Length: 341
Image 1 (cartoon, rainbow, N blue to C red):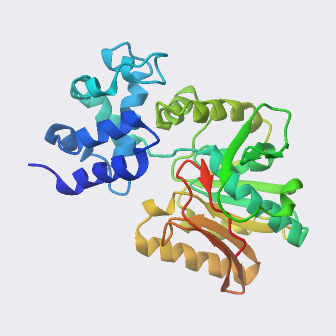
Image 2 (cartoon, rainbow, N blue to C red):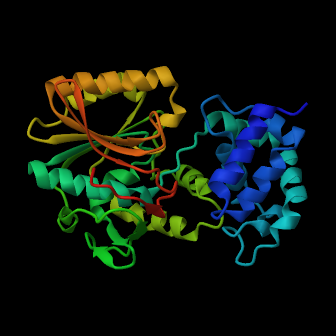
């Protein structure tokens, strides 16, 4: 019998996330949505994890070290992929013949896509905060994965193919389209960052080959630019002092905030993470931040907490002031809509 709830997840994934971004995953997700055998395997995924992303990433991970026929359909694994209309029989055969390995991955791994290009809309916020307060910034990222977004002031940016920001001699360039209001003038001056703390239930160690391979597997097959950016960021990350903490952010964030230098402006941020947190715990996170703000002011930059919009709030003495609210950006930050209010 078809698992209708899970089936709907794959249908929405195909329609809302893959269309126009990954023809392969769009095609596979529609097929999986009506296949009892594959939905049964996907049902092993722990609650709270996005099932389509995790199943497809697990298959991608196994394929990277395989020479089976399915590899010939993945743009990440062959220079001339075969037509996707013929892929599903090979996909299903691969999944059914690797069920035990997939079960292990689905139980042990998490969707921790470290989408570095999301820095494109976070970075302008940080430059503006620094410009306004003239205090070093202390970053705390929730759901930091390997911490790539904690290095945002060490990347180069290009907006709308004309506004270029150079922060490093490395070739890395985050290209994004701003479809909203003009970006702040503060963008031309990088912020001073004194601390970088990342909290994650399962932090990724970039020095571990298998961990790196998992992050690579989370990148969709056709997204060559995302893979390139990931590889370009690795040497930069080796030069940055980042503290990655394993655990639950709701339990740890108040304690970690007290390790931040008093002269710093605290900035807590998270992107595409809060939707994996149960609703009651999202409210708990907000209460924790309010309590921290009684001790010290902070900024909270986030999406997917209670809606899909991108928010920047200032919190002080337990009160929340909305600085800006932006329409939901592209999931991989190919575009966003900047707002000055």
